[in-house]
Length: 401
Image (cartoon, rainbow, N blue to C red; front, top):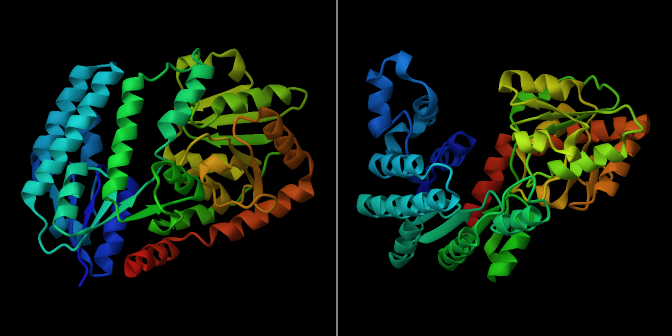
């Protein structure tokens, strides 16, 4: 019988993958860093005064695994604490920050090796975390499944953009780019099956000579409460949700907004933003809202006219699924890993093409019949990406391995 060890740091998608594996009766263990349900995190959650649960500690203690996973979760506290200390000492030094992460990856992997494999026959890893554990798993004869939630080529893509716009974001030291490329090569070497959320991520694996038959596309999902939003569009209200950075194409949207200055459109940017980008001449037509609490962000979708994400590199952006469920037409790129179909739920434009982006925005805002037709199609499209369908698609891959 197949038994999986699921590996992930952080609470990505609220531990949905190990929960699905457990529900199918296939989970051997969940290996993770810190959470409130095991090890040091459980002790702090039980005995630390509420007044001290702030900042970083509060974020860690907000990580709570589903109840059915509690008896199978194992945290590796010492490796995590060492990483946090190194990260603190690194300050804003990019190379030292990256070095701290590299050391953590090795220590996390070794701690998992020391913990053992139990009765596992398969390893499910997020992005190859704990890569030396994956290598050891292969030596033990286990099958390795790796999920890539973003393209391995992201750093190279963003680096190229930073070289074009160094006044918006600093260039990453080449040492980091090279090390990440080597890391990706190593993960590919020891992975039997890749699960990716989009064709864009799959395309990136070609550079590492990964055969297509080793790759399975499993799109992401949207929570049911997003279907409860009733969209009352304000004509010309353009919504962007996410960190306002080069990777997500905020500069491209800024240039598109300038080309549309003859129109009375409002470009609302919900997400973190640096002072450099906020104050750039390129983005002066954008209205930066800053980080909007999850309790308030749905109101932005409810009043939005269209949703725009001109991203240069993603896995499959969750905000696009949310926009579809809320009934907003979407203009995005292939690199966003979107499930929208060009001309049906919105438009796909070329990355870094501000002219095409501006043209499509104007077309959708001014053609209300087209806009409304795409809005209806958007909600229908989102119904194909529920938690149940995600679980079915994921388990079908497991059955085929």
